[in-house]
Image (cartoon, rainbow, N blue to C red; front, top):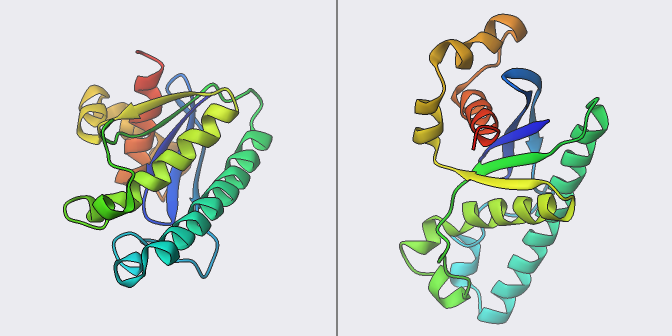
Length: 175
């Protein structure tokens, strides 16, 4: 089984496929309640470096815990093992130091990258292949009839996030 993820700040749409057939679709939480969903862009800007790093460490630990539990729950419902996960791409050279992350243009993207990096790490620990995708490219690579068919079969919701996650999961098996 292959999993495609369309992430947002604090949550994601996850679509699991076997070939082109949708096996599961769900919205999953990625962060504990009460923690900021975009700490780099907002909360750490006014904090001293030590406090900012402590907050980011807490948020990353929460993402690792909550996303791991969500993926465990998904894997437990499937009849075959997950072999890969597809996540939106981020630049290989994306900075990691706090001083740089606090500055534009990085501060606007750092939180999304953080979620993706944590999910990728979870997948690596499970032995799953991790594929990174560009949303426009994967949507262009899969025909509209394949992207729309699950809505007819499963009913709503079937949003652009679902179609993107589906396309990412399908194209990961074709690479």
